Amino acid sequence: MRKSKRRYWIMAVTLLIIAAGVWFAYPRLMTEEKPAYVTVPVVKRNIQETVSCTGVLDAYRKVDVGAQVSGQIETLKVALGDKVKKGQLLAVIDPSVKQNDLKDAEAQLKSVRAQKRSKEALLKQYELEYERQQTMRSRDASAKADLESAKANLESTRADIDALDASITQAKIALDTAKTNLAYTQIVAPMDGTVVAVETDEGQTLVSTQSAPTILILADLSVMTVKSLISEADVIRVKPGMPVFFSTLGDPDTRYEGTLRSVDPAPESVTDTDTSAKTISSSATYYNGQFEVDNPDGKLRIFMTAQVSIVLGEVRQALSIPMSVLGSDLGNGRYEVRVLKDDHVQPRRIETGFKDNIYVQVLNGLREGEQVVVGDSQSAAEDLSSRKNSFRGPRPGGGGGPPPGK
Image (cartoon, rainbow, N blue to C red; front, side, top):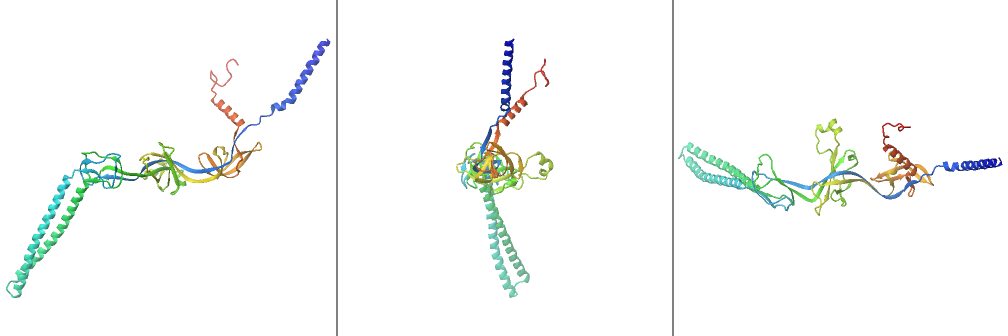
């Protein structure tokens, strides 16, 4: 009996000790673990704000070399990719027809000149006749009609000679035209450049009655033009004179720089139907911005794709933070961020300036060296838990209720 009482008291004391331990340890056990914050410092760096767009390269100077006379191409003196000098022979059109036209024009000129010489000889005869009739008439040795006839012959011959002078002028023009047309059968380079396209083949017949057919295309590749497609959302922020730079898909590490020369006031193709509401709602609108860049080594080629950046502005050694830490947008370039100070998170309103794809300039609200909160362990854990729940599928057997047997 005494042993039972003793055992009872020992159990009671043990339970009392356990209860007291739980009582004192409970507040510490229930204290939430302080989250660990991930922060980035406010630092100074160079920030460059740009507008990105896609461009296409083209030669700054490009000429379609065509034929001004009809005929068969006798020979082509160049091939695709050849470099030529101004005045170099490029192609020859069969000259036989134009040579015959030249000979005919020369014969016509000779004929008219011969007619003039004949009339000039006749004019001398009529002049002498008129003088003789005047002398005879003064002595009443001839009739008045003879004098009038001599005068008429003289004036008529002089008029014929004037007409022949005009015919000679026309014949000379025809001769010059024939010489020019014959020269057109020799196609020469109008400038220094590179053959970038050959549109015809030897033996092909060209007909130039309505328009000059293109034989080949010459381009000066020492200077290239970049035509950039600027979206309507960005075009209002760009203007001629802004710095630009670009790289090509094949050589992204090489950077080419230039200055924006012009921005077209309208898209490339503008018609009455292009401005309809249906067209505007169904397609984006882009405007061409052009600039030039030197190409001394010839790496840049026509129709290459360029990744273009137009520099809107830049600032050096500006206070900056990553754009990813920006909180609520308060408008007019103002945002809310969280700053860690003395192990406590403080909300802070800041004013921003230039920004690139990663960083944004801080004008007011932060000092260099302050720590801006990117995230914390608690929110990261909650985010991970929510993602797990979102990817968790329904239980086997369908439905969201308890499993069978529960």
